[in-house]
Length: 473
Image (cartoon, rainbow, N blue to C red; front, side, top):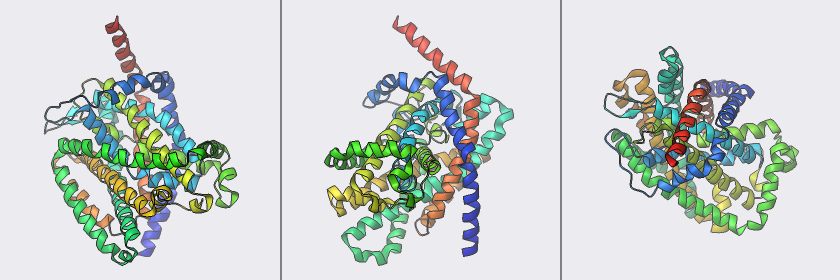
């Protein structure tokens, strides 16, 4: 068994090196640059307009018919998938393995990712379909088939294969593992003797999660939208407020930390020390990779949720993609990184060794107390991860539905729910690595389609704002 595990790990490392090597990173950044230039810096020029038409409308009553969700529910379903372990444990990994400068490259990927996510969401609404149940379905597989033509359907099939498999990793195993780890850390902070009951706690947590996930998934997109609409604001506020308290207490160190971020982006060893072995390539790789893992811009997953919106105009729904990346990466990921760098010194960070959620709890604990820090991470991460599992359950459902038809939906959902118990009782270090690989693999066909459909993105966006100007006259 150990030999099989080792063989899988080595094979994945080899494939991961290709998937997240220079060509793939260039493709990812190139798509963002092409879309940004073609849209004339749309995400910057129209940032205020995007916020006004997303955040500004969140507190207005929205309604949706059968088979669809409100624009806000589509956003929170997508945010539920992106705001998860990547914002906490993922950022810790990026900073410990890529240095403080990884935060800079995370920002770069996010700024370009706003144009990418806008384009994905816009295309998903433009080319969506009704399935046999009357639900709106969309995403990369549909804008590949309906936008590029049926001769390109094979590219959508490739996306769905990788997306369907990724749902078990990034969307399930990684999230459940993060939940059980954070809950055990919190329990042990109050009762160190509970360590010997860790497996029992994991199983209890897994059973509870299985029931919740099963009930919500059976309810379909409407129920997922209602649950995420409730969970996402609560979990975001809890975590953001906790991080802001730590930043506020350490406010005098903020200029120094920003100096570390900018210096470390181009000279990582000047910040981490040569002993860590962190070079510019690792710094960029971990910053970009964790940026994509967090906000999923270019991955093609979030458009699946947005396609179910009751909003009929593709551009208006696309604006939520800009807000999504801003909120997820520029706000929450930055706060995670700042909290770590402000609260912990170099010895605690242990650069070159992958850090976990215990570091996040330790950072919060320097101001809020060790037990409180562990409790906040346990609650925040559990809510983050649970909502991510629910959204990825939807993504996986749509991928397998596209591949095998409606008959595949229930069997997939049963297997997806059962994977929770496995994920809660095994070492997930390999799951993290495989999830990274699958993320890269599913992004490639999506990025190819986005680049090919650039003219449609530019034309649709231009026509929308031309019409807006005419209406104002």
